[in-house]
Amino acid sequence: MSTKERILEEALTLFAERGYDGTGVDGIAESVGIKGPSVYKHFKGKEDILNALIDQAESHYDEFFGSADHIGNIPESKEEFMSVTMKRISFTMKDPMIQKIRKLLVQEQFRNERLAAITSRHQLDGIVGMYEKIIRGMMEAGLVKEDDAGMLAMELAAPAVLMIAKADRQPECEKDMLEAIEKHIRHFCDEYMKL
Image (tube, rainbow, N blue to C red; front, side):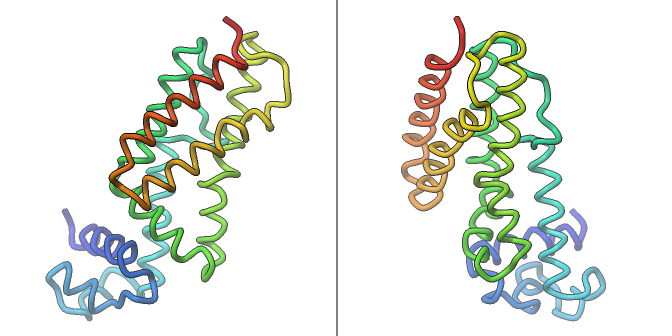
């Protein structure tokens, strides 16, 4: 791993634990095992590190979770929908980078406009937009009952987001929250998908 990558990794850990304002360039450097001025060989400053982390996490999230612009294939069955959705949920809850970014976003969303927008996108708007397209595609394929795709996406996403937030606050509940999310998604499928 390069020094630049180590700086990003350590900065993310510190930002998630201490917040952006509670973390200094010298602290990041110390965690990496370098001197503070060495950080400036790779980044202009702390804000540049934060922006690089956000860009890296956004790319990672889009690749492994998806987005409204990157929905992947429309599921062709209830089982495929369940499987793909639970894979996305598991990624969200267990990926170390995404866990730390989510903690950072929760702390900093009220102090930074870019982080506020990202938090809204990842906790609601983006997920609903992505699932609205998926559900609409499944309606067109005759797999989901005709309804308001946006409202169905909201109904699907909002409880899962709340349960993920609980697992973040209380890590000992992660297994229970994963089970509850799966139960919720199964109920959603039973209610709205055609057999």
